[in-house]
Length: 346
Image 1 (cartoon, rainbow, N blue to C red):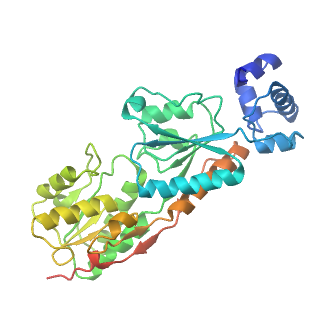
Image 2 (image 1 turned 90 degrees about the vertical axis):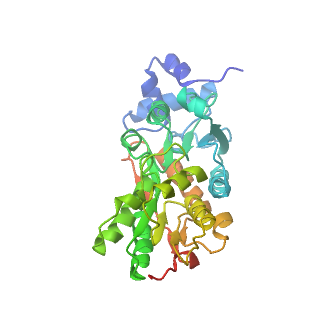
Image 3 (image 1 turned 180 degrees about the horizontal axis):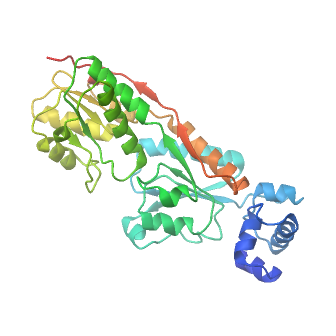
């Protein structure tokens, strides 16, 4: 049986596709009478992707939502960190009666602007967990499907105008970590993290700079690796190259995440430099598989499963309120001090 599309409904009612799309999302830009006609016709034709709020207001609350699907887009970088977030997303979608469709986007598909099959007509909402290229994001948002991003590109202009964004707080938490290092008498504090591709890494860098500024310490750019690299310092070779580029080994290194921090610790150890005996090191994310190394890593704890649930809650709200202003939601985090940052100045 052929699936009913928005275009099919528009043709039956002699309306534009854009008007039908807005009516199906219960947009107040369309009159109540037109919304009612569109929803009634959609139900008669067997169209399943309908807003629960639109159904209730039009008197069709008995229509089943069991076929509703939310697509989650992520690059092939799955880890325990992402597993926990996806678990939270799955649990919350189940609670609302939505199906989860998890799609891993290959680099080739991103370059060629390839979206999952049946993307336009069978998707109720979209959750984007990875930072994709500007061109790919523009290709997604033009489909006018409710979308929520976890994080966003450094230049979030396209995203901010069409979608909601969930951000884990980074400025104050990393400022707190850096200030703690300074309180121990440390002044030569470096930073490693590619700030060019997403907001969260840039926020953490701003927190690092803010702590230095508050302590009247001039940042030493020679021990700051905040530039763009192909793998964003997620591979050991790039971390080694960053350390090789430092003219001296800092007293402490603030890392944009736990993956980078662990590679820093390993690289320093291979050079006979101990952590925290010689150098203090900190991370971000509180990834259990990484923070159980010796020394235990000072980091920032992200409530991963709750974060996944919150993303879904924002998406459901956006589906039911398409005309409200777009939102950026900041999720609170917790600084966890452990042994890796307990370095006393020499």
